[in-house]
Amino acid sequence: QESAPAGQPSRKCCPSRPRSPRSMMSIAARAFRPAAGVAGRRTLAAAAASPQKFSIYRYDPDQMAKPFMQEYIIDLKACGPMILDALIKIKDEVDPTLTFRRSCREGICGSCAMNINGKNGLACLLYIEPAVQAIEIQPLPHSYVVKDLVPDLTNFYNQYKSIEPWLKRKDTKAKGDTEYFQSKEDRAKLDGMYECILCACCMTSCPSYWWNPEYYLGPAVLLQAYRWIADSRDQFTEERLAWVNDTMKLYRCHGIMNCTACCPKGLDPAKAIVHLKAEVAATYTDGWKNIMTEQIANNKGRESGMMYM
Image 1 (cartoon, one colour):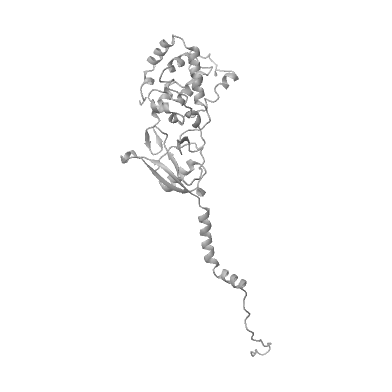
Image 2 (tube, rainbow, N blue to C red):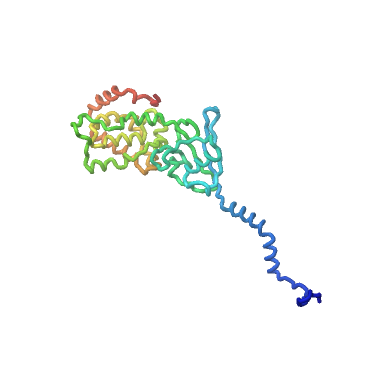
């Protein structure tokens, strides 16, 4: 028995109790809690990451080297849901030399058209679909490449210009008139054509266009040509039909349907081409030869080969 100070009760010395296994485990857990917390956070961070490979076409004309596919890995947890989000993240955080077109990010401008996993589409409208294999991104097929994912669309735009895609009238409006009216039924005929955003997805998916891009106008341009032929306000319908009635301009279309299958706006260029051919067959006259000759003579520039002017 220990001697206690004056005025205080004495304390007995008793042996310490043996601790239970459960209490020993709790003490050990408290002793190692800081280290376990750090390791736990690392484990959770690793589990939260979602890496995805992207294999992207690279070509730099200044380097005079062959094109190649370059792989990038990004964390999908730190990236937006669209293919375009991944491209922007790679350019901003991984490789600033990566080059591609983009603008509206809403499927309106058509700038970010490219070939993704073998199918043409808009990068801003296509979701990233996680997979073990890399997501392959290339420029629009069978087109000259300016750099990386940027195709040269000069020929396509010149072909679009060649159809004169604007309202053409033979009479003049009276003073004070501001509009050319049309019925609701006539306006409805333009549905499925005016929505085309000229992204060139259908053009570069068409084998007929791959074979004869210098002469065949292609699905998007023919769709737009028929859009003005079907417009009740336009007064140059016969001239437009006579000009497009050509073995190469129109009849290189073989109904392969790639254009309709890949259109990011859900349009049907193949159907418009069928209607265009039917319109030609229904209204053709021998006098078209003279009309066609006159149209070609009036605008020789739109008859030139690959139309690189």
